[in-house]
Length: 400
Image (cartoon, rainbow, N blue to C red; front, side, top):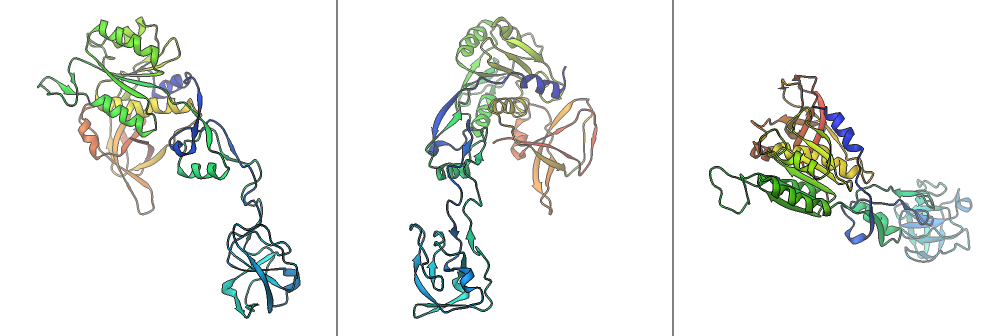
């Protein structure tokens, strides 16, 4: 067996082939940006008024409170106006361009207006460019606003729209095949006999991929027949960039997956990792650089392996490092084998806002129903057996 870190590092050596396409801003959420977004102009693009009030020329009124003749009004959306008489003022609205020859805004709350004249309160603060957002003070021309490799969220869409961009370059997400194996597997809607189990893995794994915006996913099922598996995988390898199998990777007499993949010229990079659950994990690379993962058939093992290894591998190919959180144990926990252990947990917050993890250990790696009360899992190191309250560990949420 190799360590979890060794397995992770090996997978990192084989990124997916990168391809890009253009996506309209209305469909951007969840896509991965493949270009930097630069500011087309300074922000704000002009000296912008921040308060409704009056604009004055400070040098002409530093020791004065008025009255100032109101010479007009500037509102948002109007071209630049000018204060021709520095002893007068212009009314200005929030968002307007600061009029030429003005360098101070006094809010209405500090001004009284009567018969077309404005008088400033003696307590008003009169400083240069008061209540003015100076041109370029937020963003400079051609400044990078969003980096390539960013997973698009709603606020990114707003930023891109603000630059007048309707379509941007995004990475093409891979086509993924999920394959369950085994004579005991039956479809969700089928009648299940005492010796059979329903197909949990393809549905759970596909749902997880969808939660991360990977929607080109098809599912397959092959019985424990070497020829059927060979023929099915041969076709799948021609069409898909990521192939995920569940079951058939251990040491049983009907675990044909490693041999069939070898026969199909998929080069094995490792088999078995010092972890629980998921020890029989298999990884290989196809002739066309397809990434092939053989996951254990137990549902918890399969889902943990997907979240721990496969999702980071896919997104790192796009330059994305998946975010990780840290949670502190809220109860003590013990685990004896010298294996990295992935412990399902229920998360809540302390009074200080810290993430706290309540252990929810399953009875077996097939005890999938117990995950219904969990929010994710924490990774416990192999060289430790006792884990105390307050110790912090990396937290992996189930979904994106």
